[in-house]
Amino acid sequence: MKLNPHLSVAFQGDCEEAFKLYARCLEGAITFMLTWGQSPMAADVPAEWGAKIFHATLKIGEALMTGADSPPGQYHRPQGFSIVLQMDDAAAAERVFRTLAENGNIEMPLQETFWASRFAALTDRFGIPWTINCERPADASLT
Image 1 (cartoon, one colour):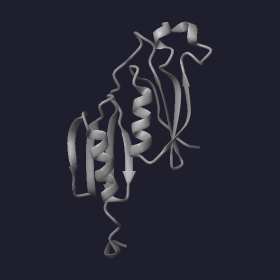
Image 2: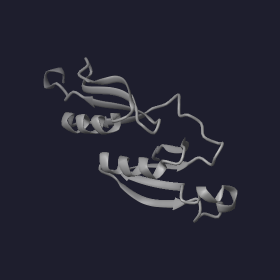
Image 3: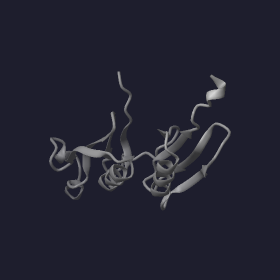
């Protein structure tokens, strides 16, 4: 079993831009992208919505993240969750943080904590909440 986030009503017409940023930032690959106009649901949205994303799949390592642009009038601001990036490389955590934080809202800046070499919480410019956690290497003296 795998658990993969699906951001179904999380985008207001900027899903393609978001997924391209996530692919670059998280070193992933967009493996599928279908517009509303290409979908069997094309008649359910205004014609100007045809180029917006009906479904996108982003593969990051072994994980998948899917998402879509909400049809007009059906958008809901994401809340009550965050996508947690569990990382083991502090330099990569810093790079990812800088990219996701650009034009976003930083709730907790990337910093060292008692449990992590780097930890941060932010909401990106698309309104998606993220947590970055880069745990400290295991201390050999504790084993």
